Length: 80
Image (cartoon, rainbow, N blue to C red; front, side, top):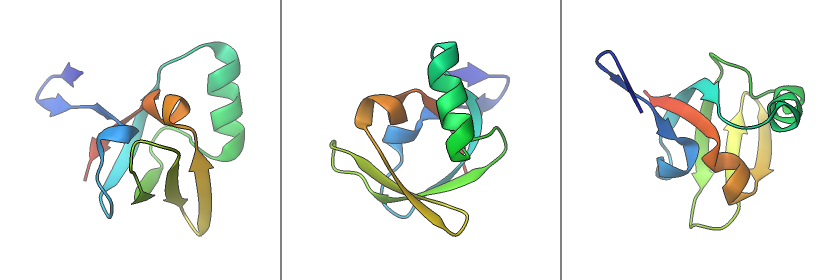
């Protein structure tokens, strides 16, 4: 997704060790609410710790989270 000069990509496109800022969550209301409850709010920085096209392990602040690939695909980030 391209907005202005910025390129937003799904979280699943980040490789290990890369960080992104959450800019949007694409999905239904239930999915967005669940991710928000887990701490995946807009403007939050996430770092990918494991991404091998299975579940992703990400660092969200001091926490570590495991996300299914489909759920992570719905989190749009701007790579930093």
